[in-house]
Image (cartoon, rainbow, N blue to C red; front, top):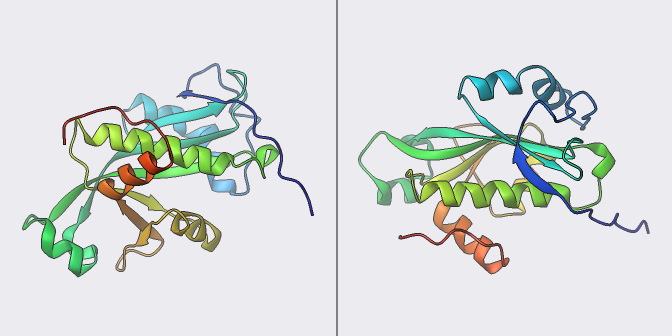
Length: 184
C-alpha cells in the first residue's frame, strides 16, 4: 500500500503577480486555464476573490475562488426552504473553483483548501449575511469529495451542492479550526 505523502507547511494568501500561475497543473484543464488566463482579471474587476495555497510564497499548490452568490428559494430542498424566508432569493457564498496541483496529490491538500475556504465563508457570514456555502462540482469525483464533508445536492441545479453556514461553523469548531469570534 502506498503511504500518503507528508503534508508540507502552507500559507494562504490572495492571488498576486508574484505567484507562478504557469506552473500550476491539476486534473481539470478548465481549472488550469482559468487560473492562468482569467483569474487575475476577475480579481481586478471584483468578480471573485482568489486565494492560493503556497509552500514558498511563489509556487501555487492549490487555489480556490470565493464570491457572493444567491440561490433561488425554490431550488433549496422544500423542508429547509419553508423555514427560511418568503423572499425569492437566499444569500450564499460560492466556492466557484477549488483545485490542487497534481504534485501535491495524496497530501490532504484538497481538504486543507476546503477547510480554509469554509473558514473564510463562516467569518464572512458574520459581516455580510450568507445562509450557505454553494459549490459547483465539475465531476462525479468532485461531488463525492464535497458529500464527504456534508454538502447536500441542490435538487434543481445539477452538480451544485450546499452546506448551511450553521453546519459549516459546527463542523469547523469540531475539527478544531479557529473561526473568528463574532456575534450570532
